[in-house]
Image (cartoon, rainbow, N blue to C red):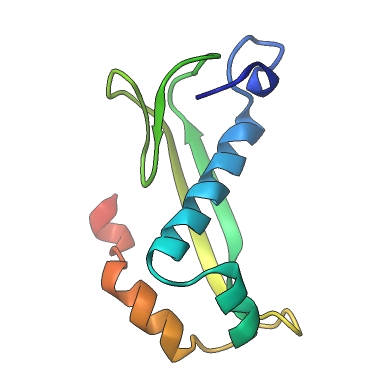
Length: 119
């Protein structure tokens, strides 16, 4: 639910707030799949955003009930934001791209969606 601090000069939810919410949803999803930030650190690997796209479909306002997940949807079921990330697997200690560890494959590959099919 957008709070007063989330509202910008145009009287609707600021675009940067949606980016923050997307990050929070991604961490919640990763943790639900069994990979926490502590696991990332232990494995010295992470999924990092290479590119993010955010299509703001409709504005939202302070106090409006939203459902945050794979989709960000207003209380009336209307889509308010479509976001897409291209991710790269990195080694945390160096920041360089690395192969996906087995723990990532076990957790993430079961829920991967074909980007072409999802469009």
